[in-house]
Length: 277
Image: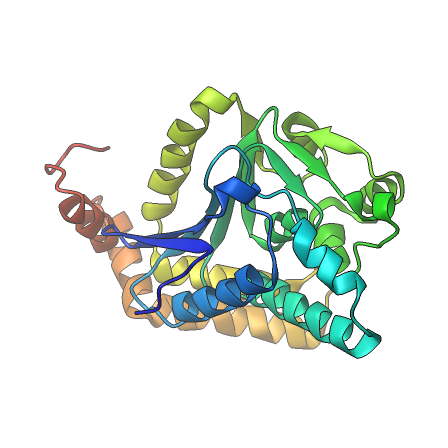
């Protein structure tokens, strides 16, 4: 078991993990240590077959204020090759989160600036508080959102990415929902309850089907048709139909009963039979 200094990893007995950014005294700003620990944590989660999905959150008032000021001051005194090494480490984190086999849900309160906005963009889904604050702030200090730019552009589209990368404007959770960065935003006082609703919804789904769907949509990309993509999609549905979970889901539907994975969730959470529709 690895003890983290900048993170907290919680395992829910129902089969999902919550990864907390845990430097609240620094507004969860990240430095080289946090980046390395995030890479290690994601690798551990990737290889845990018991997990259904990942929730990414920040302790304290803010999701993350972006890069740690002291770390940035150190970076300013480094040569090109050392800075390149730092950039590659950050790139590994972003690509590993985006390609994580587990479905991922980011939950944002307070600030999500710079690279933190990249983390949100790398997750499959994100929700947040109405008054959360987002900013691609790099241009304000003479930098560019380089490593995170592919993920931000995928999340909000090229036009919005250009605007916010070039202006460095702040925007709130309501605006983040409008442009697609968040799936939904809520009053801050309701956020934890809404997280529970999202978790409950995800737990109702086939764990295998969610992983397969994530891999499928990565292959589909922007949906450009090709013979190879057609064969991949046809092969995917054939494989999952004959799988154990696929058969269980079909039989449960046809016999008007709940599939086993919901039954397992209920018992793991000590809920009585029939407590949910």
